[in-house]
Image (tube, rainbow, N blue to C red; front, side):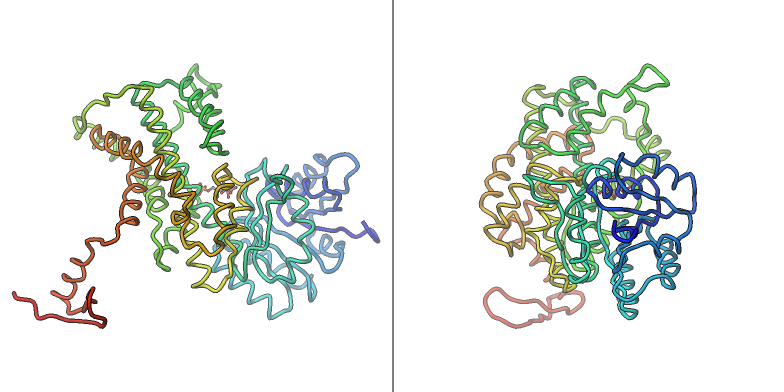
Length: 470
Ligand code: 6PG
């Protein structure tokens, strides 16, 4: 710390803010955090590693005054109005050239608005996605910064120091202009929703074949040692073993099946339709969380339709292999859809999102980190402007290797009436995507028939309308 001034300030000392600040201090930066709640400022100081410089204050002006210029401040507060409130309270305190970072899950349109608002006042505002949960914030998250490059230059060394590392490379890079950081984080979360839904479907498919929690644990643990290696598969293996401290059951078996959400998956779906880009596995994941909330209706429908579907009659060993491949296939499809969305959004919204850097940053620290991201990093190294990773020959061979088992799982799930919407959706997308001539010529004919919307021909250019014989 020079002249007793601090290198970095944090607004909001909830567990994420506190952990990120402690992580920053552990890397040699002097840090100061603000929270109105003095139990949180005390908790921050109490948790500091010996020999690090960490201070907590309950007065915002006091914190801002003690920061080195240009000031580097991050807020980790709930998305929406709290972010605007923090900005308003900071405005009388900051000066030209200072950098304010929103590290929460804000909607990128809010970030765009704030970037413009603060640019008029010569203050840099950056929307930065931070992924990895509480543990990641403490030990090394994946960081997705966007905004103006000059501001990034001020915080680059700090963000690189605190981020997760893969093969010594930091899981942070400049990911584009304006609201790009929060856009990339939104799509990250959409992919997160898709993969979580797929894993939950794999769980039910295996459970229907008779696997108990111990066997599910062993299966996911083994999967995590191979091609499916990922944070989400790893924690799933752990979850099956957790005992309930209130009963003798496994905790998972007494958790309600109503899934919560904070909205970032929904935002991804909504924005995909605006572009438009098709991300049906993400859409399905959002819809399944919604259906999970219809508990009362599902109880009634389950009694009404209880005879739907034939019993699952499979060899367990073969089934486990098939479900493994289906999960592998559909996980690749989920990344493919999310990355295709980023490709399109980057162009449409002029954000210049570098996809090779995005997949590289996602390799470590974040919730969707997986060994597959190494494969995608290689694919983008060869073709940085790939519109869809399914078009990469290396990725194609992985998809093809899992295709027939995916078909077997989807067919069996349909016959047995086991809900597997995300698996079905990934296969449906794949079959449409690889079809040279779809049946949508008929849709064009219908549109022209009832609405004179015109159509294009395969043999002559131009727009045509026909007086259909009716
Ligand atoms: C992350 C997570 C994090 C948060 C999700 C949860 O990358 O660390 O995505 O941001 O856990 O927002 O979202 P839902 O509550 O909507 O499931």
